[in-house]
Image (cartoon, rainbow over the protein chains, first blue to last red):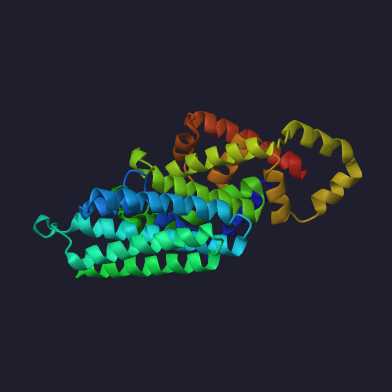
Length: 162
Length: 184
């Protein structure tokens, strides 16, 4: 009987997590990054050595935006999930940008150039508009602006890679 | 242990998501299984597993290699998460109470019938959750995941000889809960 019990216990090894859950969980975790190394928008701006006002502005806008997002939309589950995913993907993009910048040869790690400056300015502006939309309860429009920001970050990433 | 695990951890510490992704792919199913067997609810197990890996990635800088796979560290995080989970939910299962109730409710005739019935996995799972936390850990890690007593001892922060003793006791209790006759 003992042998049977142990056989049954071994069979419990067949228990597996749902693949869709695993994929989503994996994505969100990887987007979060380790605490000490986490790339934040603020860090990226710093790396680009932009003006202090822009750095502070960007950080304030993002913090406010995220606070608004997760408190303001608490009752709107579908949008929260969507916002969560977009936020995670933005975080992932920032991690990638930071990684690329850190791993570029030091000779290349100089001024980012006017093109990237403009893109960063666009990203910050979009965040500001998204914040305004949130204040005015235009949640869907706000979400659209955040999506646009993600697109801009993708462009920045591509520009840095090249 | 995963091939090139130490190297992957080194890269993950640097913040490389891809490296941690490989660790996740390799160890997530077993961490999920460990948690699921202890909490018994799929959604709760998913949430807790997510938390374990989230913490794992966030705190990976604190990880120190101790001669065992990375999973040993993850199991320790998982155990703490489960303790918090039960503390919050205020769920408490007293093994002695469960066993005594079961024995009181089960007469000799019923007992024979139960013994004659085939054991199924659901019953084993249920019985497993009647053990106390440390006994559950030992049974899952030793007999489901087939980890060595040394590795289990490291995860549980106990001596290997204690693990062996607790393992014996846990199996006896499991049999008793399942009303399985022991041969000795």
